[in-house]
Amino acid sequence: MTDVYERGAVVKDPDLLADHDYRPYICLSDRTHPFHDEEALYAAATTT
Image 1: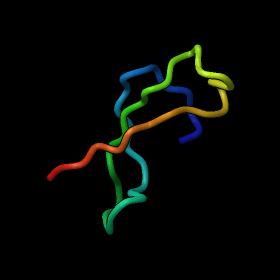
Image 2: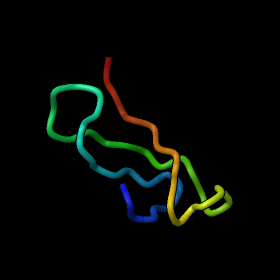
Image 3: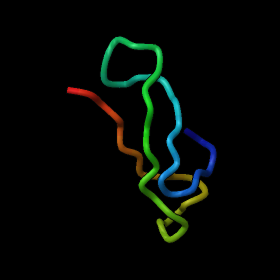
Image 4: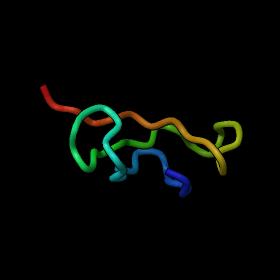
């Protein structure tokens, strides 16, 4: 995930947690995050 996304954006990227092609991730960072144009914090969306 190298693009800059707004906080709350849901993005699709390769699944790092299971044997699936893709997984949705939610952007938790905003522009106040240090190095916001290089790094961000994302949460993986999962089901139970």
